Amino acid sequence: MRDWRAVNGLFLVSTFLEGLAFGHTTAYMPLFLAELGLTPAEISAWTGLLYAAMTAVAFPLAPFWGAVAERYSRRLVIVRSQYLAALAYLLLSFAPNVWVVLVARILLGLTFGNIAVVIATQAAFTPKHHLGMSIATIQAAMPVAASIGPPVGAVLIEAIGLRGLFLVDTSLALIAALLVTFLMPEPERHSRTTSILARTGQTLSLVWRQRGLRWNFLCWLLSVGARAVVEVYLPVRITEIAENPAPAIGFILGVSGIVTAVSTLATSRLVDDHGGIRWFVPSMLLATVVTCGIAVAPNLWVLAALTWIRALPFAAANTILYAHLTRVVPPVDQTAVLSLTPMPRNTAMFLFPIAAAAIAPFGVSLAIGVGAAAYLGAVVVGWLTARVTPAEIAARQRAHEAEVGA
Image 1: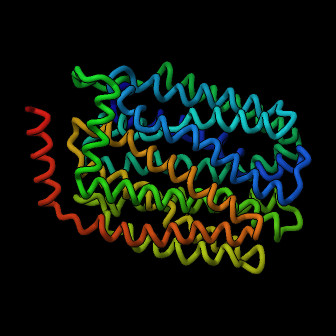
Image 2: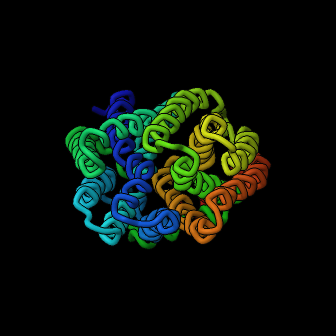
Image 3: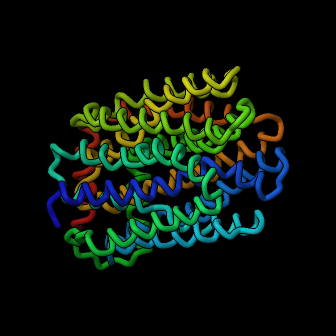
């Protein structure tokens, strides 16, 4: 199964199943914490702390997954994530207190880094003129899952409870793992004599020295940090203004997932010879405005409308940043560099939610304001990224290839 369309279909299905399961832990964690007996103030604090604990485990490991995948096996790096996720959801289903929930979230932190390896693997099989659509298809799997997961989760909660829902999530993660274990082909590996640590150091050096890569990674940091804050505190915000929060969370996040999925596929048309990076700034400006609106929305319908509008820049950002990297990184380095993108993402998902958690006791709206500020920072850095010229990128690539050859 080495045809790029078949590989794309496999990753679409497995990523969709992972997204279904993971989305439930974010959407319904405030309700689960309430079921465990925490007070509203404790729920606000623990929601951010649990997310931060998960990413605190993830981000130190982020630089190494690409080098491990490149040297040994992309398949093993991907299924590592799915099997550990199944174990984490199983723990959640039997958790007697918040400390076991913390252990489960830490386990989920060990699952991070597989989507970047998936994208890099897909890029190895896909012709350049189909790359934008293939990346967008995989990226769309998560919002499609997000559109189905919360409403279905709300129905399942009524029927089997939150713990039963987490058992279903265990099964979904296991199915994804088995599909990839038995169906995913391994791309051709380039011969490497350097150690994993040395190869990781080479990749970090490459990203730091090339201005286009450096700004791209900072765009990841700010845009993902902003998104993480909103994702963590949006369910809490909904519980503040909804009389029956579970169906409201399911409905709002479900429609948001549909909008994101459609928009993700549409944004593949923004990808051009330079990755479509010029569209990043306007998308982050829109995200800044609507996130401020979410923080102060007076009623549920205004909050819902702003959440759905926010799905547009949310959809565009990842595809644009991944496509930009495939245009500015030589093919021989793409697996290592693309697999390094979890480092700024995981760092952001640790730093920004924990900053929001520190502010949350003074008001959930203030916590969401941290996300708006990060989006505004992404506007500035996106402008700097777009200013790097194709000639500079080509010169840097030639210099790096000469250095590697030497």
